[in-house]
Image (cartoon, helix red, strand yellow):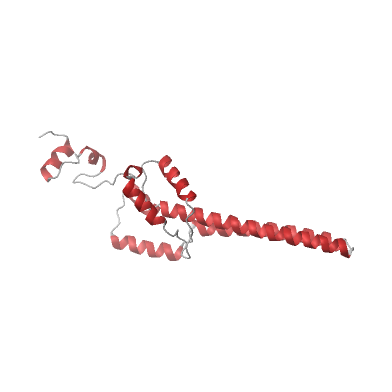
Length: 190
């Protein structure tokens, strides 16, 4: 939703709180998150590959008639399939964690992409666990603490003054009253 709001703002469309809420409800009901689609696709691709491999292995076993050798091959295949399943579950868990981290970090503006990547790497190294709701337990608190202890990591929040757009950057941060903002906005020194 944040990406959609940012895109609309970039296009010059400002939404009211009510419009934002309505769009959020529609997006939540009508659209599938990219994380779910990617996870489902990964799972489908992996299961399709596993089924094809199993079919091939079963055909090979049917051709072999020696019972002792057959049991040995079955045991090997069972071990292989268990490993494949464990690998798939690990891959899906890692993918779910990556998407949850991206979702969490999308709510924060960092001073640069390099800093964001560094903080994300550090975050992943901390070993936060995903809760049942798909969010990291303690993740938001970690970022809020980081925001307090190292504010330079995050982009400074810009408070809109009287002038918006290209003139906003010329308004002095110390311009507290309307007259100072107007003069600073049009580039006239008082």
